[in-house]
Length: 251
Image (cartoon, rainbow, N blue to C red):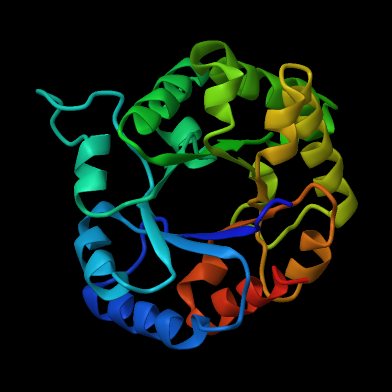
């Protein structure tokens, strides 16, 4: 039985005051509301505050990106060991915004996945198609390419030490959401693709849905057989909304 995971991705949002209010709200409300594993992925500058407020709580925390390098002359980069130094458990890898705005290739994402594992972090690997790619009917080819890059570079066993997040790019921050059936179809494809290499890894790996999951649609999405949780964007910025999604993960 795969334990659900609900992970918040704050993206480039927040102030010290709003982060404190959000984290205090989550800590106050999380007790007994969910059997899911819960985490928040904060902007780098707010990770120390996140650690200070969440230490000792059941909520884990992580980063939104990581360098392929463990240290060195790479101005502006953040290394995996640095994230671990502040208690991070998770790190998001290959988010569509990193792929689109920063030109991250499948090969680079695979290297970041390996670097995260080497640092002792659990990578949340994001895969997904654009609206144009969906309309062309190439969703499975795109997701397979992104997934295979990591499997080929890291090995399927190492992939099993991470988490996969399916994020249809056309449903991120747009208010649009893949239907439960559309999401389930892609999640089932992902699990099947991994099963071609290793059935045990496929059975155990958690696949999250990452396209505008919110309190209104969470229960229906999470009821699907191959959806094991959510990578939550906008709804993770308000404690009541995020807690509602966490509660939905009980079903």
